[in-house]
Image (tube, rainbow, N blue to C red):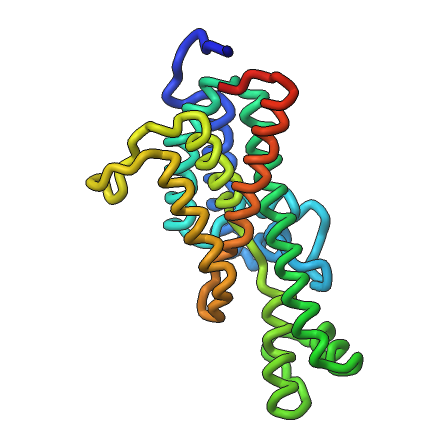
Length: 245
């Protein structure tokens, strides 16, 4: 069993992740005032989008949509991440964080590609080309049903994804596995054991993801991806007799 020599309220990796996320957020606001859209450059776009670039697979989970989004993710990163880093050490924690973040992106992209394929199957090649070449607010031509599908396809391809939520959900999963009987307080009042909290959260995310509500702009499968890939990595470490708790 790994025993840390000291417990820090703000260990190095968590501290630096908090700083980097904060700097990215400030940079997004500052550059936007200068006419530079950092979200277009660093947020994760679908492969079919003209804005897709490989580095976005990593940079997107340092970007956030707004201050509330940033604060919620950073609070969870500090609350649970500091405990995991103190137990694992910085190197292992960073590997886990990046692996779950990439896993979240992979599952999100896979589900999005399935949706894109499903919508594309209703359109012919010319209509799909019209969507791929369309500019924001440009007019697209077709029947009412075709236009509806084309608009949905355009949204699926061109809506960027941002946030550290996938990695944060991976951290939550690890905390629930390592400290299953620790009490967490929902709304600071309702005590729930960590293992049940994680299971409940996972079920809710699965339900919301499968519901596919058009008004819901949360990447639920990214959250599930972070949890699934986190589970797989923990089991891999355990199988190879690497002590992780």
